[in-house]
Length: 190
Image (cartoon, rainbow, N blue to C red; front, side, top):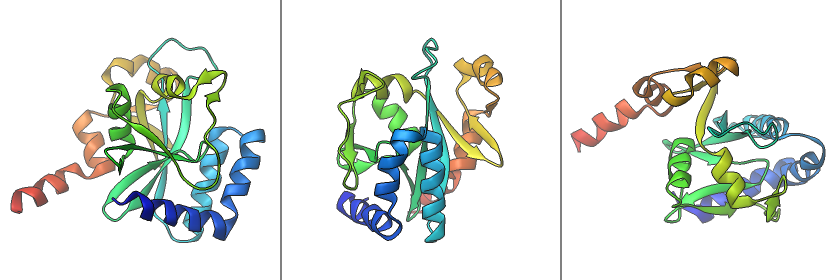
């Protein structure tokens, strides 16, 4: 995946729909879920395949920085994570990551934050350094489908029930959201 192409692509969506201005205003008045849903609506209007996702902390709740809504955008055959609230993608080795890859890269401290569009990335969010905040929040990946957020995280089954998230075995989650089984079969044939 070519980052300049992705930046140009998202910037065109921003310009065509005024998303950048809406996002800046929305950050002052709306939460991340509202911003993500508005971005999903804008992307859907121009025919782009995208979905709502979220990240959640596995640390003790503080009721301020426990979770965050994001989106994934289909680019070719791959999903790319886009944080519409911050206006960034998470990259590793200049490659944009999907939700699962981003959570792993952040856990391994092997990631960069790449702003997309014209917004300036804040150095702090909710009174925390942006990297500390990302490390706290981007721990448990969840993807929204048919009115339910799904995760595979075994360590948080009780928390998932408490928050009305649904748990799937890891292999089922991968197959449902990333079609990993098909990708593995395709690789074996080449």
